[in-house]
Length: 244
Image (tube, rainbow, N blue to C red; front, side):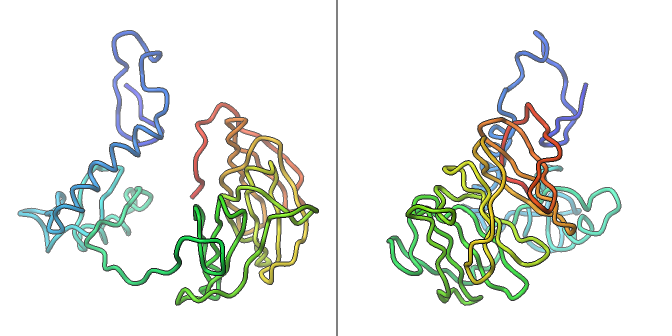
């Protein structure tokens, strides 16, 4: 018996040993969760699994760790509980739709394949577009403000941007998987520098001290860079995915 590193549930080793376990644990787990979430799409009044008699109203969150739908009261207990606060939560379809923006295209405020989004301290939305090879910045209402165009040549150019992160200075770090680099821009879109490579970065997170954690698809690894962009450590043999 061991604890699964993805869903954190106790798992028995099957007959045949660990070699017969699923190889892509992350993908399998996401598929399983998607099945639970589809239940919310078809029925917005799913009862809480945690509370007695269905809880205090319909479920608003699905806990991926417990595999339970939670009402608002149960979710608050999870969020503040000593041993539960780090559980992986997903908003159910009971969450209220607020706003949408953008349309298919190549112009301002248009997308072909948006894959990454972050929000800065001024509530500006920063969106990466994989197939447009660009980063667009919007105000909190979805109004277009700025495009960082990665097309062309030169040090500022990039291909297939995916993950995004902000450093302590507010600079935008772009995981450009097609360019095998991290490109750094100011919030005004001015190119600063690049670092990383050559293994196809797809996810990035930056801590409060400016250290970057980069998920690299080509190397099945997680690389750590100091604030100056120097690689200081690599964790290998990982199933790559998005960093949270």
